[in-house]
Length: 127
Image (cartoon, rainbow, N blue to C red; front, side):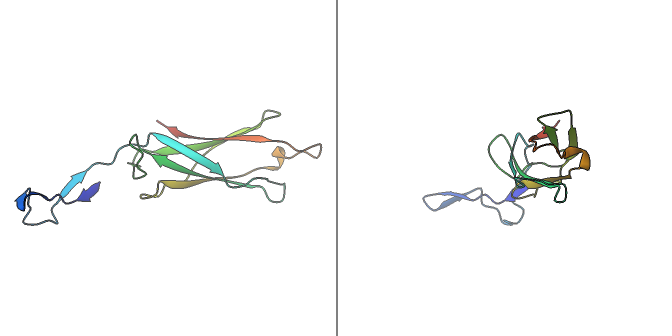
C-alpha cells in the first residue's frame, strides 16, 4: 500500500484538514505491467559460467512500486544453435525500485570445444 496525507486550502481556508494527519490515506499498489532487463554478464566460459540479468518492473503508469504479492518473473536462456534451453524463476523485485535479479549457472552441456556459441535471454512476467 502507498500511504500519505492530503491537505488542501483555497485562500488560506483549509479543506480536507485532518486533525490526525498520520491517519492519511492508503491506496493499493498496481500490478506489474512491464518488465525490462539488462544482461549483466556479457560472456560466460566453462569455468566462469554464471549468467546474471537484472530487471525492473513497472505498473501501467510507470511506477516501480508494484504489487508483488502474486508476481512471478522468469528468465529463459536459449542457445541460438542447438536445442539447449532452460527457464528459471528470478528473485523478487525490490519494493521501492522494482529491480530484481535473475541468475543461472550454465552446465557443461552449454559449452562445446568446437566453437563459440550465442544464447538469447528472455525475461518475462508470469500471469
